[in-house]
Image 1 (cartoon, rainbow, N blue to C red):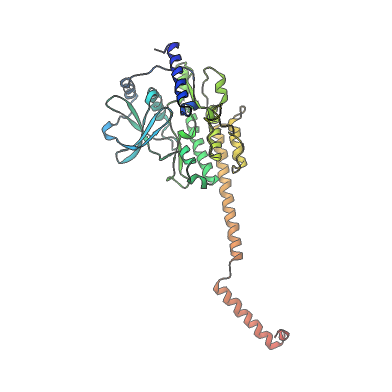
Image 2 (spheres, rainbow, N blue to C red):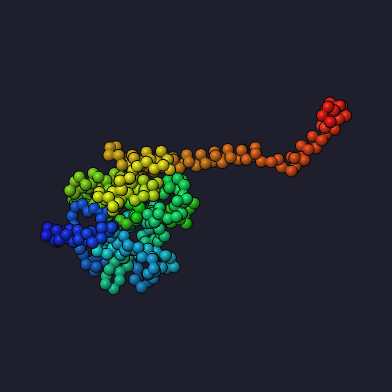
Length: 366
């Protein structure tokens, strides 16, 4: 049963009251376009997940670390220990019905290194369902705002951008639209590789386009205003497309370079007025790339973004190698001669001077 229009109005009024009480609420940055679905009971949700053949883990086997809780716009994530490994355990909260969609998407795409790894589900005694995933110590938003990030070079930043583009390419190749691309939905682990590794997470609002077409449904689209493609606001019930994720990626790339949030709770529009302005430290090629990511027509694909970023990084590495070679040559020129070379020069000079004295050729110098 779908809610009546009166119920929808009541929910919207409650949302307005929440925002009046807390203007800085993260919910201010979120937009819901489309319909509001009915809620399922926890028992119904878990039964449906079991029907999908999802691996179920005993709740008692999960040892929660209560000191490491993170709250997002729609969910709560805790770190925990499971089978000797640290994992992330996600509870969907009020939007618990979204867990079914998220699990279906995760099972489909989590085999890619730039998509968070799915480990299974569990349920507590109240039949509340939880998603178990690989643990990452930071979100990209946390990393960007850290002290360490201030010292990171453009090579590091472009590697993060490449990981994001690769993750979205894999999603789109599998007919999935993320629908909520922002720095809080990208995870970062600094201990993998030279520049760390990043992956996409949070697929509760994502859509499998094939499934949506089969059901002849116009899907919901959510997004934070600073990352949301403006064309989604022009239709009452738009269908998400890969191009809308690419726009979100443009805002995210600007954030990677500027270290500023594209959203704003202080500006009337909810959008940072400096968004997409040229960043002094940003390479011109990368600035041009995220401009192409938000250009209405034609808008670049994630495949092309990956190609261009790989070329930029390749050129950057070649320039670094060439510079090292130049520095090495300069160092050799400016280094004092070695002891053996110096002795040889002194010996040769002495021999020449002795010859000079004998011949009188340099007697005027004596």
